[in-house]
Length: 124
Image (cartoon, rainbow, N blue to C red; front, top):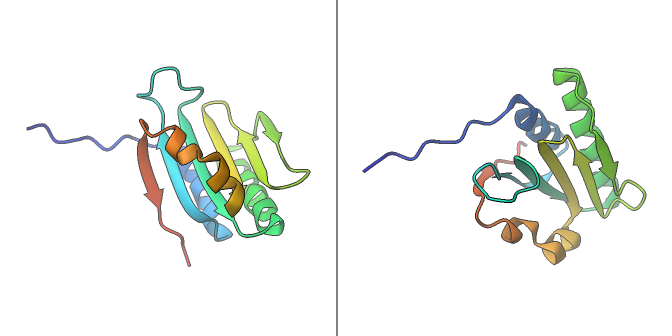
């Protein structure tokens, strides 16, 4: 019986997760889409916040972490106007920051059920 290999994460994925953890993002999930045929990118990182203020803070923290650690900026971003769902597109890594009800409604976690799922601890 072969032992399952843990997929390698990229420094960008690690910086995104760290940025989320710094402002107490909830239910951080990394979906590794590299083995999913037809996937739009290599990685989805999904989390949620409890208010528009927290969702905006998470997005700012992710952008700050990726810029400071890797000198990376998102290629594209959407949703900052209403902060119900902010998307930060780093091309191979796409970050989804939701408000709790929006996350439940869209169900991205379940939509990409074929992906390898890695849950990250919330850091106190």
